[in-house]
Length: 98
Figure (cartoon, rainbow, N blue to C red):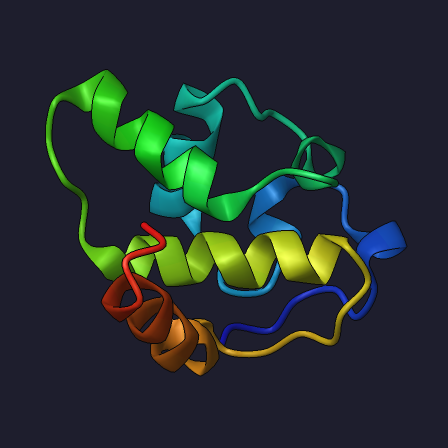
């Protein structure tokens, strides 16, 4: 995980959010999210589905893990690497919730 801000209130750019680099920030901007506060209260599953619908493709599911990590961080949870959420994503998908 790249070095980043320690708390949501200290991030100024999308790239300051843990796990978010230039490529992920560009994907978020494509969804109309231009500032870290734009992730507050957002559903990472819905963001991922919207991005896939907009581009007409299915992005790597690791991007969903990154969206989960970013939205949880902005909700006040500790910064965790994106792969921390992989098992949660896979369990939810296996349960047919998405």
